[in-house]
Image 1 (cartoon, rainbow, N blue to C red):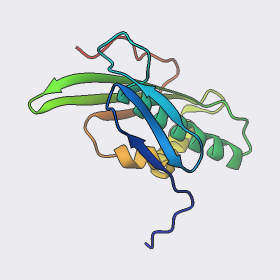
Image 2: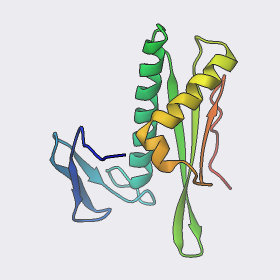
Image 3: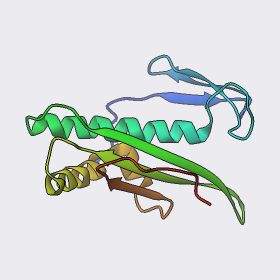
Image 4: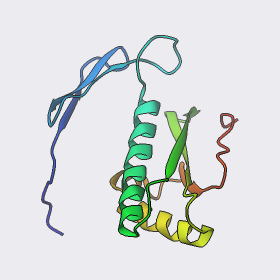
Length: 145
């Protein structure tokens, strides 16, 4: 498949967890960054990747709801945990999706379609550290222990 960009942006971080991440083009984006292990203002990579997955997957679900003539009622929650591994650190992402206006089988079909269409979900697909599940009630609960 030929690559043809529909949107382009460049993101730059010069200070790691102690400064700002910002867009150089493609629209204004600037976010203060900080470590998740410190109580200082700013967003961390865990929050940013969780926001990316929740937003992109929900936008894809909204498009599928619209295609089916449904009102947008999908809700996506993502829990992100940071832990150590043998080389440093790793993330575990657990996404839960509610589609309250349709029967469970239809909701499962819609979610499967959207996981294949959502660019962020596709990027994360295949990772043993990422799960996406359909739920009736959110139950992300506590951190992974």
